[in-house]
Length: 255
Image (cartoon, helix red, strand yellow):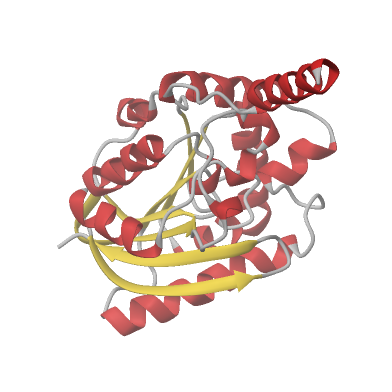
């Protein structure tokens, strides 16, 4: 019995030590910033969606552009917004499809090198003025130091799930509301939760779970958008595609 008791205690101790310890929102943000500033190699290209690093890179932007157009037409919104801001522009997969239709394209990201990559990709397809804006994960309000005036369209695609917490996501949507002109629109994608416990948001180990950090119940993000001053108009779900799964696309307007 003594050996059995020792074995059980050891197993319990191992189980307890293996339980993840939630980190504070600020700590998760600092870990995320460290991750994006120090990453390199093949994973860098995959996580930032640079050309040649993800399958079907050339189709990502056009597919999103087509979905935006369908949303905009259905809601009576201009399909060629003049001033576009993309939050988390990454390697330019979306920028190359939206920038040619705009008079100015503002790219916001946490990495200076990826902003340069995005600038080059946009320059490959059009001469639309390109404005890079560097922000911190824990200081998204830095955007207001660089962007003056209002924008017509706020894009945020394949980004929310990478944010280290729901609080970080709320800040981004609050800034979207502040940046948009009256009558402007936001096209935002999040990962949605299902009944599976594996789809819950994480609160630890950013580097190991980067693409699964933040997820929302479908109605939860709808209400968050309303609380931030935006009106949800339409939503479409993509349960699975070539890149990942559980994508929810929201079309929001500022009334």
